[in-house]
Image 1 (tube, helix red, strand yellow):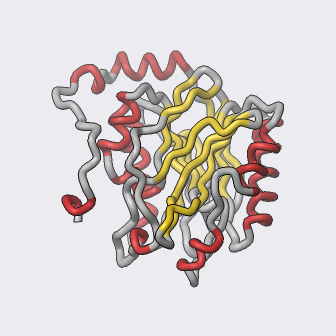
Image 2 (cartoon, helix red, strand yellow):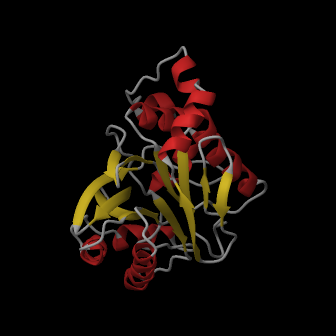
Length: 269
């Protein structure tokens, strides 16, 4: 399967961002991609006034996701992108959508909210509480996780337990001391410890680092972008995946199960 990963600097205007997404979708489809991963804040990003995201959020049948679905009609490329949808009580869900051939394949609401390094995503975002989300794509199983989720190894393991062979990780990784190193280590670790591919898309621009990458099942970065908009390509190979799991049978050799139940928020505070 050909994997494409696109990164761009999201704006406050969803229509502008939809045009950018559509352009990347067209390029990915023309290049024969089975999977295209786009950033976390593909719908809109409010850097200086983050509270405005509640007013910009759209339901999954709103014009942004409908536009992605419409453009995907007739294409075998599955597209994963991040949006915010209304959650009630003035908050939103930080949601990944997967679309292909005009259909909404799945939606994943971010479980781990970014209350770290002085940020408080939970002030504006309600966490998801559903099961791990894995979708079929071009004969492969794709697990969905968002940005801060990558710091929680049990999340990736649950997705692999559910059959994921590729982890799609849209993100908007905020700049800061050693943050780019954190990103590279976490994305690489999730691939290596699960002997799976990781396709990670980072939003770029003045706040976020970009640094999109694809990592193979033995932890080698196959391709990556810097801090400019672009589209990268990599191949997920079935025999390569099987050989990695034969050579490094960590999934077979492990002794502990991961409990799939989500703890109440009061227990995680």
